[in-house]
Length: 185
Image (tube, rainbow, N blue to C red; front, side, top):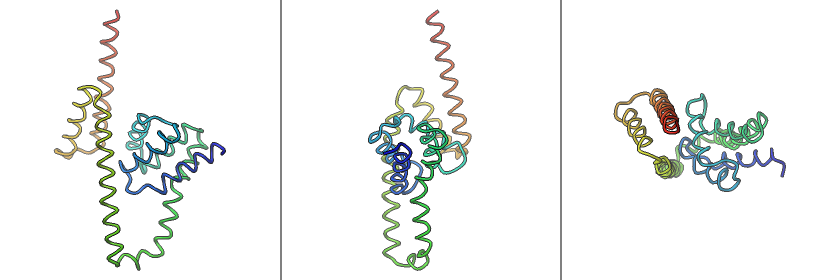
């Protein structure tokens, strides 16, 4: 199968199975891109996720574009993005034809409530996996706790929390490099 077709199909599959967004898509990315295809590592997924959060647009679309670009340059980014959004666009077009007539049925309301619960469970599972993955050292844990407190307790804008965490990570990196250089001297 040609590489562009593989790229399109991988993201079409993700787009067809992605409900929710945000952290709910990370298990799909892990299964399809890391484990099944070996195109990227889980660390790269998290890096792309981080970049996608701070760039305008929908996170999963940004991730698809980044992965596609990594694999096959600009055309790969376009193909991956089209593959990802095509199932959702198709579903939305079909649903828009019936949304008014179906939304009033209790069975549809209950089905949507069940889907929301499943998406929350998937998100929680992903968050637990992510938290396990960042316990590399006490500095990472400290940044996590401070970022969580700033966001959850003090309601600081996520933009400022992300920028501050990035600055803290960069500062720690510079300090570690400086210490390493002094130790080697």
